[in-house]
Structure formats: structure tokens, C-alpha cells
Amino acid sequence: MNIFSNFESGNIDVVKADQPGDIQLRIKKDNQSDFYQWFHFRLETQAQVEHGFELQDLVKSAYPEGWKDYDVVASYDREEWFRIPAEFDGDTLRFKVIPEQRSMYFAYFAPYSYDRHLDLLHQAQMNFNCELETLGSTLDNNDISLLTIGEPGEGKKKIWIIARQHPGETMAEWFMEGLLQRLLDETDTVGRALLDRAVFYIVPNMNPDGSIRGHLRTNAAGINLNREWLTPSMEKSPEVFLVRERMLKTGVDLFLDIHGDEAIPYNFVAGCEGIPSYDERHATLENNFKQALLTITPEFQDEHGYDKDAPGEANLNMGTAWVGEQFKCLAYTVEMPFKDHNLQPDAFYGWSPERSLAFGQDMLAAVRVVVDQLR
Image 1 (cartoon, one colour):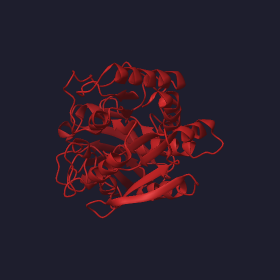
Image 2 (tube, helix red, strand yellow):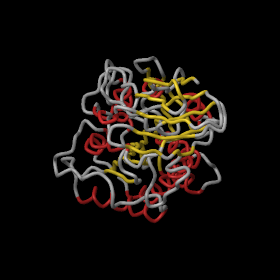
Image 3 (cartoon, one colour):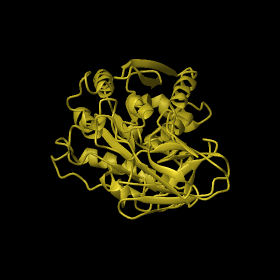
Image 4 (cartoon, one colour):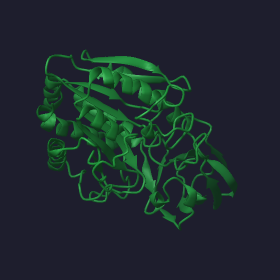
């Protein structure tokens, strides 16, 4: 029996693995950081024998409440990712499985590999309306990639969508794949109508270093990118610095920042209520966008989510707040669950890559509803 994490986004420490029924593991921290929650490892063992796992020391993890009612994600072929029931006692997550094959993968959520990320970028650029550009390099010398979709023109809206500031939130890039599929489908009238009215600037992965390293929330230097937007630097957060510089050149009429939430088992959005310039126009845009999503898909709801910031108390170091204030535009953080969407539960798959992808497609339809209201 062997346990491996010597691959891209792999993350686990083996405490004990002498017997199949008693496998004890711990999650490594992000580099130069105390954050830890993302795990990804491979078990190679005898098939058809029950194995018992313990993930230990989770009370000190980034989001201990995220383990309550959480089921582990697993795969034999790295294509289909299903759920394994787990129990959490406040510090240790326990689960059992009888492997059907000798080799089996486990992860916090279905991984989105860097190879798939590169495929996404280069398949997108094959569309005549799409241009791929490298804005610069990360601290690990990976590309910070931007897709520009649509032809600039007078009166066209500028729509920015970014994902995976927090690299362990892989559902965010699955979402981006679905959104890009629909936007670039020349037979889809939603995508066509949007490109008549807007230019899209899309960063499918803001944090390739953290994604490759197997981090939950930070880049190579242990920096949480979603706390860097007010004063980013090339030394600590080139990812934000370079994207922000391009935004200042293009302008922004609508901004979506795609994330995953460890604890809340629902899809929801978080807006800009606390920014200094928030006004009735901004509130109306936010409400119209949410109402459109509620109409389009049962995968969205607006009852459960984050508490709204009091007036003037938004944290402008965060992407959505900084963009909303800087450009006086509609700006939303989109959150998806690591667990399941409780209003539409699926015991076998939970919230999944496929549902994330479909949610990205639905989100594009909601953008279509409000695009003519933007200024």
C-alpha cells in the first residue's frame, strides 16, 4: 500500500499507513502561510479491501466549519469524481472505502489541472473573436493569461470575469469552462447577443502558482490575492498588479469574481453594499442581476450567504469591493459550494464539475439580462 502526492496540486502528509483500516493523514499548509484545507492524493493498494482514513488536525484548518457535512471527492479515472460519505468530530474527518481498482484518487474538490487550463486557453483562441495574451509572469514564472473576446467599439460594455484567486477553489475554473463554451458557441444566441454589446476580458486562473503547488488560498509567496487589490505589488502579488493595471486601461462596466465557499452549502453572490459610492443605481443593478439568476436556474438562491457590509465598511483590499468602487460598476463575488447545493442535492456527486460548468453557462444568460442597463 502506497500513498502519493508527488504530482501537480498534490497535498498530503502521511502520519501512519501500516494497515488498510488505519490510514492517518494531515494536510500541508500553503507555502509561507498558515492556511490549509486543500488535499489531493493517490492511493495504490489491494482492491476489494476496506480502507479506513483519518484526516487529522482539522480544527486548526482554514475553515473548520467546512468539514461538517462534507463528503470526500474521489475518482478512479480522473474524469468522473464522486462522493464518499465522511464523518467529522470537530478535529478529524473519517471515511471508509472499498477500492474497486488498485489505484484511486482523493481530493477536496475535483481538480482542474494546469494542462486543462492551457487547453482551455488555446481552444478559446481558435475562435475568430478571441485573443489570448500573456500579461506577465507569476513568482514561479507561470503565465498570467488574459482572454479578450469581442471587438471593441463605441458604446460596447467592458465585462471582466476572473477566477481562482484562491487556487483550491477549482470549481471556479470549471465554471469558467462552461461560460467560455457558451460565449464562444457561434450557434448560441445568448453569446452572440452579448458580443454584439460587450467585450469580455477573462482570466480563467488568477493563481496558477498556488494551483500547481496544491495551495488552498495563496500564491507562491503565501499571499492571499483577494486581499491585495488596493496596493498590489510585483514583488508579492504580480497576478493582481498586472490584471488591475489592464483594468485601469480598459475600464470595467461589470465584474464577476468566481470563488468557492468551504462552509456554506449553497450557490450565492456577494455584492458591494459597503463601498463608499454605493447608491440606488448600484442596488438596482445588483437586484436585477440576482432576479435574473433566480429565474434562469434553480441552482441559485439569495437567502443564504455572507452578511452584507454596513455602509462605508467594505474591505477595499478585496477584488469585488475595489473594482466596484474604482469603476462605480456592478461587481459581484460568485460563490459555489465545496459540499453540495442543498436546494438541489445530489448524494452521489454533490456539487460537481459538471454543475459548476452549467452554472457558468447560466451566469452568462444573467449577464445578458442586465448588459443594456450598464453604463
